[in-house]
Length: 614
Image (cartoon, rainbow, N blue to C red; front, side, top):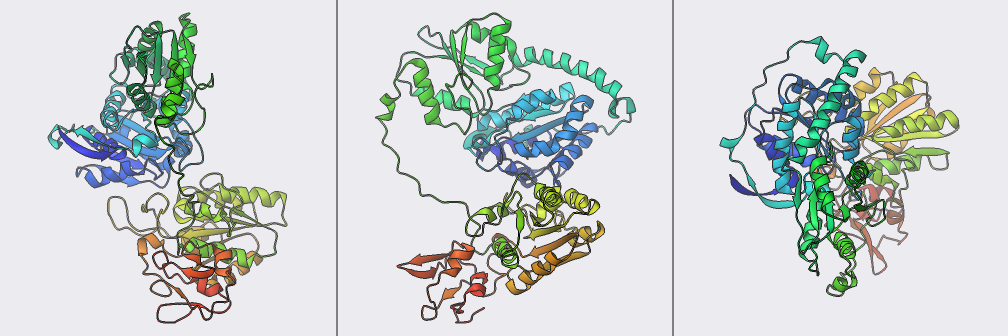
């Protein structure tokens, strides 16, 4: 063993390697992304790693590997589990031969997600065991326990860290490579009575699943994942917690201005619930405050046990409005709740700490020089004055909704904009319907919607914002980039080829930073019938680092030519263009020289350092 200072996601990845993982798949999504990337960076030679085209593909690949006796890990965030739920629900009935951990990172807040889904609920829904780490150290250790549990009971298991576990840093004890487990898959053994799912097999396996989960309630009661900490001074109070809420609760107790010390129940396996340990805890206290993100999973389980065993212990939490339902918990929030629970006025501590200064307001915005800004602006200019709807999608380009662009009328989930636009058109055929989607999302979930539009003869313009990367989650490769997560150079999958292959006749590619050409393509596309596609292709500025610009460097404003109309500010909202003492300026530390502002300046006052203008 040795010490390392690690991010939670890195600890999870190294824990999986230590457990003898053979195959790792996934789809990037904050806060889960760094797990797969860390495995790729530190993997033993025999470990295969891939960014799958979407979460469903990743889940199915991991299942196939686990059928052979391999240890497989599939990673995603909570909304990605929705995409992967179809194979997962059936896989829960079929089972596996090796080990399979489904790592789903939940995002309380939400900080970078559409929802605050709680994967612990999905574990109960799918009847699969769930591990919920409370610290970086426990995340490292617990994922190894998760693989062991999966192999022993031949079932996929959930591993559910939240953002503050995934992105926290800590100095932890990790194994030396000599201590890693090695798993040699025996290979796939044909057995259609086991691997081919039929109603008769599902019925029989459902009974086995229920028996297994009932047994696991006792197994988990004795597991180190669940623990009871006795209180002091004869306290009749208890705190039950899971995930990062447990760490917050311990910190709150350390600073508690009271001789009362509640007992603590840590729940690391919310499903199947550690019933025996929980009942012992409930019998030792009169009142329990439950601290957990996001749903009242532990709270409901404890309430149920009180009814089942006729206990009079009072359970307080979200349902009693002692803890908030929505949003991310903080140490201060939990401290205040614990103070109130033990009868201390929260004002006692509030006076000891000064009010922190207000943080500056920084609304999310497309980066300076982002080609998506030019793409949105071209469509906006071409369709000005016409009845349109602009359906957005998940990615950097969701920020197209911000003023002054205001080019994102809807945003639901990955790939949905294409189908939503069809629904609008079938009801309002006089509306010009546009759907924006990124290049990575095109491969992940947009192709099906486009096929549906072609087959059902919708009128739709699909705008693919191709910046040659999966930008929002950290520039991961995808099928269109020509490189795999294993570092292999492969043939790029052609977006144009796919679109023409499914029946589109109007498919044009243009650089959005050439505004004249971009606007012209949009106008021509809008006049065509059926499903059309425009591919705005220009690389993300973060991967080209200013090399793909009109000026080759930051733009400048000629103060003698500038008339102060501020059109460059009003119409595109680039963060590099600012006002200083009433005059328009360009911040050279932000400007990439993309030239978009120069193309819309009515007096050609914007140019390069050498005086050239666009």
